[in-house]
Each structure stands twice: as C-alpha cells, then as structure tokens.
Length: 102
Image (cartoon, rainbow, N blue to C red; front, side):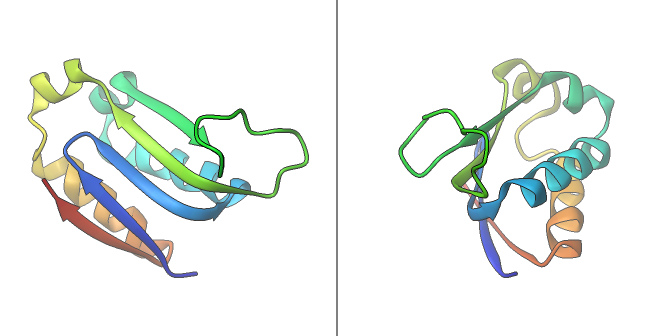
C-alpha cells in the first residue's frame, strides 16, 4: 500500500485507507508519540462524504484524520521532533509516504 500522508500543523490526513489498517496504524502512532501526546490526541475516522459516521460493514474510509489538540501543541510545540519522528517511523513501517508541511 502506498498512501500519501500529509502532516500540516496539527492535522494528519491519510486517504483511502482500510478501516482495520487505519485502526492498527492509529494504535501504533499513539504508542510511538508517547503518553503525553496520547492523552491529548483526538482521533477521527472520516468517510468519503465529509464527517459522516463510519457505518458497520464499511471496509474503507475516504480520509483518516488525526487531530492533535491545541493544548498538546502548546505543551510540546507542533514541530516536536519526537512527535514527528514517531509518526514518520510508524508511517514508513506501514508503507506510508509521509509529507511534512506547514
């Protein structure tokens, strides 16, 4: 799988991801970025049609977004190297392409 992931300030969006894969990666991301981030992170699974709920039986989602709360950003700084390196290592281990912007 080659999924383009965009990190822009406090938002990471991954496109066309299988839900089971998305949940696996989210779990790994939270472990990689540390408990401070894990406590503050807000996770959203978003469908092809905006912020419509993911229905039982759905196999894929259009967009998977990880939103890091304002408190976490103020605490650690948005370009915190541990945060970025944790995200990068998990994405690369799962065949993702990580693009950092913002």
